[in-house]
Image (cartoon, rainbow, N blue to C red):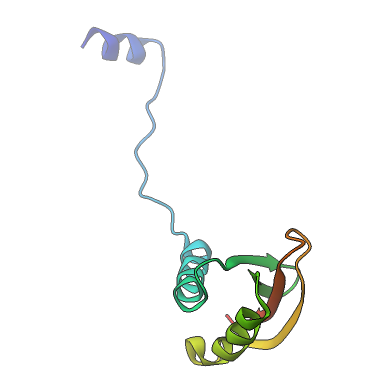
Length: 104
């Protein structure tokens, strides 16, 4: 009680607790990520990039997994992924990368 009186007399005002902020973009990315992690091989590394368009990058070690990921992506999320392409992974020299545009 003495502390409350001291704060009041010093002109200090406590913040009113606010409700949690909505994380619409983060929540949507989490849903997409979970969808991909469940569908891809267990050692696949899933990441996103954004430069005017949202892209997903899936890095896998084996060429067989590249083929598997390329076959699975068009079936996920009712056409959520398009313009699927393959290349090398810049961060992982012994991995292959599958990249796709995300339509959300």
